[in-house]
Image (cartoon, rainbow, N blue to C red):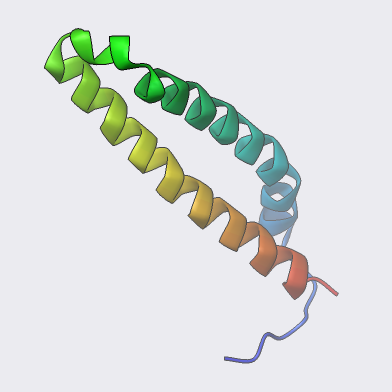
Length: 79
């Protein structure tokens, strides 16, 4: 699908301004969770906590992919 350059709406411009900070926060949380998951001692904790952490790390990875894709789309769409 060909990308059409256009003037972004005010809402899209605001979203584009917020995305770098949002991505940075997600990356920081993702890094902290993966540090936990890389620590063998972490797996001595409650299995529910371990699973919750693993699922959150996966969810953040997906959120990051969506955020990067949206950022790229908005960047490439603007005139």
